[in-house]
Length: 177
Image (tube, rainbow, N blue to C red; front, top):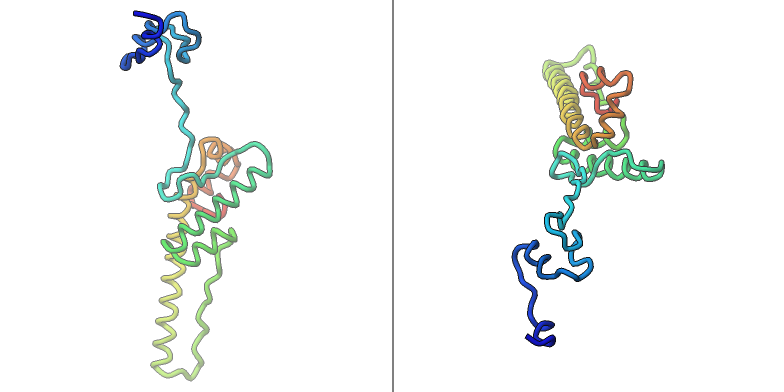
């Protein structure tokens, strides 16, 4: 085989060890420098992207620098608010955005000389208020799980180091989180 034919001969495909053996004498053929038994690719550490599929990439983490941390927090909070609003209601979305539970308006008492119909309407409004308040509390507990699921392991460790974390976790207090 002439040197021109050797240059035009395609390199063998298949086993990298075979390719490394055929390329002896060439420098830096592969990451393993052509030495058999060395890995050609190093496994990459998988970056945490959150536990909620719909919020992939929007996480609470401990990045370097205060500005970066503030940006990540703000961006993630907005995305969680947008995600939870249609799913759990406007009050939950407002809670996530403002970090304050909205005060639901309590129905005013009926007048002393209210008719039976007015009294019955008032009772139904009170029932609706109680139901809405109970539902808001239940939904905020569900959102706690979503928010905590978007925290990286480093952030979870920081949160768990807070003195009152046990009571926050027990109450599923998304605002305290």
